[in-house]
Amino acid sequence: MLQGDGCEDWRSSSSAKRGQELKDHVSLPLPRNEKGGILITEDELKVAWEFFDTNGKGKLTMSEIKKRLQTFYKDITTREVKFLLNNQPEITFEELYALLKDNQLTNFDPVKEAFKVYDPNNTGFVDMDIVKSFFKELGYGDISDEDAKIILETADGDKDQRIGLDDFRMMVPFGQPHDPSASSTD
Image 1 (cartoon, helix red, strand yellow):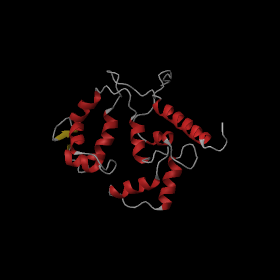
Image 2: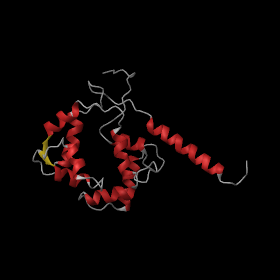
Image 3: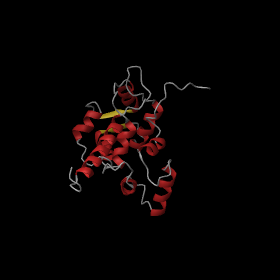
Image 4: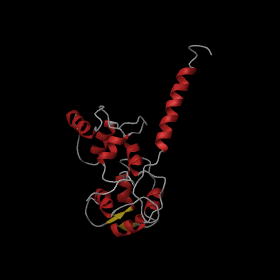
């Protein structure tokens, strides 16, 4: 093999990429519903609902959902939002919960999917500039560099000065791994 031909770099980066891809495909033991899909509790869904139902009217329209989702998914289409609403023009919390509670999603990690929005360049870490832009677009105001530092320090569970998927997973109130071998001592 020729030295300095660049092959070593390609192989090592390719190997690292394959390792990351394998890690990405590892399924976490998420709590399951009676149909084997991801367990979605009313409490978890209420957190999301309150994010979308900003005026507290108890119903969400396609345009309201699209407006909030566009902060995170710039190119979301009306068709995609319509699909999310089961082709209805609006939806109540009860209708949404009925739609989601018996899902059969087996190869889906909701936290990992949410994390991708904060890591658009696929670096494996939250991009704080993205966090700042989300706060501003959602009407929460500007995040100063000092505020960003506090967010980072608070969220950085492994203290590596970055927010990775595992750190992110500990911040969100849903999609937490479930250890089926652990027994409750309550």
